[in-house]
Length: 150
Image 1 (cartoon, one colour):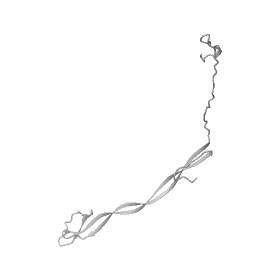
Image 2 (cartoon, one colour; image 1 turned 180 degrees about the vertical axis):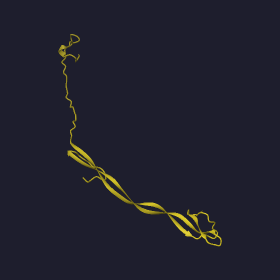
Image 3 (cartoon, helix red, strand yellow; image 1 turned 90 degrees about the vertical axis):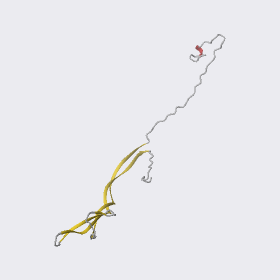
Image 4 (cartoon, rainbow, N blue to C red; image 1 turned 45 degrees about the vertical axis):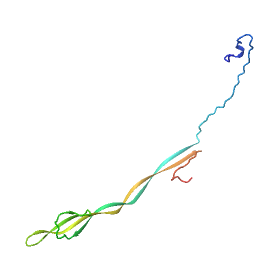
């Protein structure tokens, strides 16, 4: 028997068969759906605050240090590099004698030494802060080290 036609329009396959009553059963199924509703509005504004900053920082400066020493008796009068890295430069002067001649008067030892000085530096630092305004039923959670207490 087919369900395409109502039972009273269908013919039995042979004359001996009795027509049957067909009952169609229906069920209701719930249809679930969601609708979004605006609960509130959140506005965030960024403010930039410029703060001056200064610090005393160590700066290394090199200076020349000179020592004046008398020449040795066997001094040859040439520029020498000493074991500590200093340079020994001979300085000559004229000495009046019966005949004029140049004699070694002294040696100048020049070396550099590092001195640490404090030098003031200044800069402007930008610090950004966020201001939050809400309207309606909005749950705002602030996370971070610099968050203000709720």
